[in-house]
Length: 81
Image (cartoon, rainbow, N blue to C red; front, side, top):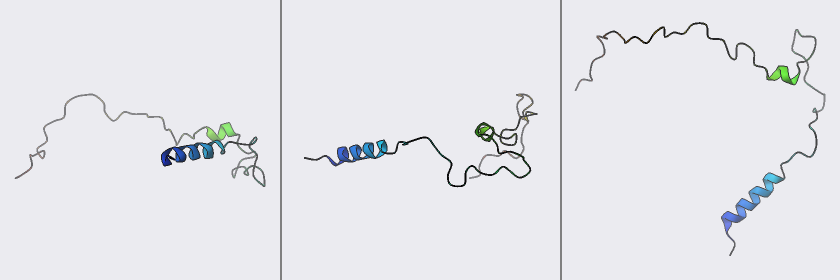
């Protein structure tokens, strides 16, 4: 008796094994992308992977200055019912 789950698992494994690269990567037709406007040369892959400062800004000031308890809130009422 053929087990459908086992057959599907074998088929998936074979399909995944066929997805491997056959050789080194190459640029598509036309070569690498042109450099950004205002620059002389195109960025290297390492420079492309380095995030700009806007992507991970440095935190200058922590909004929580200390761990003191909150003051009493007159509007913090239990639900009416």
